[in-house]
Image (cartoon, rainbow, N blue to C red):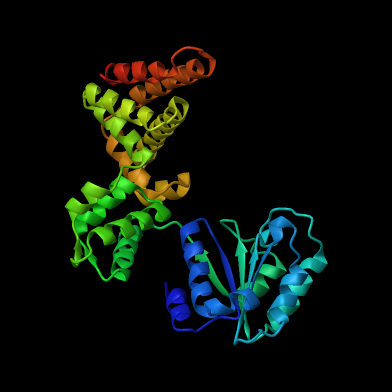
Length: 339
């Protein structure tokens, strides 16, 4: 990201506007600014956080930004919860944004102000949005595509002065999913394990990376559809031993089968995986996995499965007996439902 490179080179914008759905990228941007704008021993004097969602005042944030740094070169001012950039209706009056509008037209040269909007989109019609986009560096944290995530993994590994095998990258996304916080933690662990080497290998990933719950649910479906019911039941028992609740597992199973149904129908209409992901607002990697199962199932099978799962849901919510058995029975019946 070119904005990150500029921050690392101490080339700061007076104002940053952060928004978007990929929380990890927003978190990393904030951390980079904290690391590079104000030295650690000046943080008590020259850093402030104003959370507007917690009744903080925008006027106070601007006043902070206009104050000269104490015994240092710069001030860093975070303004969180700036929902007035969105279409969501709030109680803030016009005068609240007036003070920011005035600041944006002549920001303090010794301050870096970081405005975070916890939303996927901005209201482009608003004056404050137009003015900020004109006078600030805007960083939209979009969900990464599957290929972007693979590139991000390699970049993150390179930060540890290591390389990673291509098949290890593929396996890591399969096992850990697409949550960047989780992937970052796994990369840190793999880097420690690879100390003394220059490469993270496929075998390292298999050895050290636990499967996400979502991937285990994918495996449950894979096992049952391929007639490996015993393996499916064994995996289900493992998940129960890990304190996963039957109702949560049923919800994940239902969501996956619903996605398989949607992917199958949209693929039949000529939509690409990327288009399906965009329309359904799910990650392309999930669409890719769902597509693998969609190819094996007919619409009639999927409708039957979803009806059966609705009955399981009702039984789970009304039963006072062993709820774990309800899903186990469903998994046992599943191969017959698709035959």
